[in-house]
Length: 241
Length: 312
Image 1 (spheres, each protein chain N blue to C red):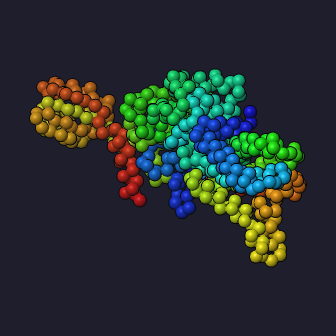
Image 2 (cartoon, chains in turn cyan, red; image 1 turned 180 degrees about the vertical axis):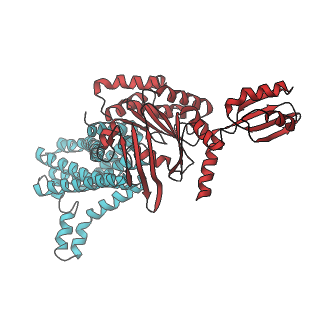
Image 3 (cartoon, rainbow over the protein chains, first blue to last red; image 1 turned 60 degrees about the horizontal axis):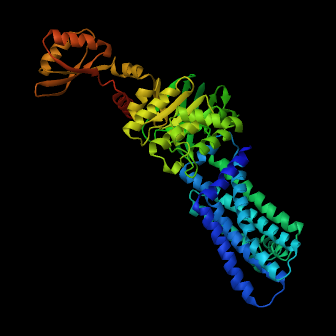
């Protein structure tokens, strides 16, 4: 088994061996369910597609927040407890460590996200849900999760403590989440740039309503790539300190 | 096995180690001795391929750590000052993970884990979660992870740190048992540990090696042939008069005197102990105790570090 998969498997196991993993999973499912009840079911009669779109809107928020908490421990905790040396003294590249950690967090997030499928199933019982809409919505959530987990890995690579890691990745995530607000007060070409960078406003609504645009897929993949690339660079630079 | 030339590491303006030069042969057990902050951990981290040096060259088995760090890492087992243990895993699973990470194949991993556990006497905690282990076991599991892939070189940073006396003895035996199969480089500021476990010492002070050699070499060089400690049931002055007649004994000093017992320190090779005892007994002086004296490592170490500071 490659070092990346070994690290990913160990990390994924660590989520299930610790309370943290269950607490995060439980909270995500609880908050998703509560918000769905509070804002969607109590909003009166709606088309099933709109109910589903609202569910994906809510899940976007919980996915982003969960990503920060899931990823904050990945490298910062290892640095804090001294276990990172086990990896850095082994014949393993820094990128293998980073990708392994990222994969474990994405798979864990995917498991938690897919566990919310009971909500679309409830919509299906009382209405009509398009399979394509469902696939597009969940693909959007997974891509968002991938991007925000990657940002979390970067924050975790930079920080010495988990709290600091959460703060760094939280600030970066919120910054690109509200980039579209900056585009309202900026002139071109910055206006276009801020809009293109917006984590939600420009790129998620199509997924939410059941559409998959290559442009949006590329955006989330690009954010993932840049964040992981930066995390690898941080890890490499730590070899000097 | 290891050749270090001009090894230097700066943290900003501060030189943690400066121009280190030493070589280690295959199968040796080498002690890296220094006070806290002397640069031991930095040097060991560089040798363990965890940290990159600012300047200098290190080769392990002829392979340069800068040009092919992975090849070197495969040959090295590293135990940092805090054992890198995942508390959520069981000992067996953890060691298996460490073995596979260092390139042991999946089919060989179980065998490698069993061997490492036997060498470090951790077989009985194979199925126990690491968080439940005592400090002594944690330290031994740390050693087990370092040797699970059968590296040629073991680098152990303060392996006895925080252990109680019984655990120290167990760890010392574990390290002694590794002699021959592995080249071992260990660091400590607990001086007696180094003297009892190692073939050769490298004394490091303020990032530089101030002396190297066996304990006896260092004692001879610094103590003018070593010292002998004698406790006699007689007045100190009379005992000194007698021992001075023994050829090879130089200056004598009284360490303690009272209640008819005197403790003396004699400058001279510890090999002269039988002659000293014979002379005393023949002159009617009862000998209560005789020992290698201030040639103990503490004295050597203090002398070395003090001399260096005075020079600076």
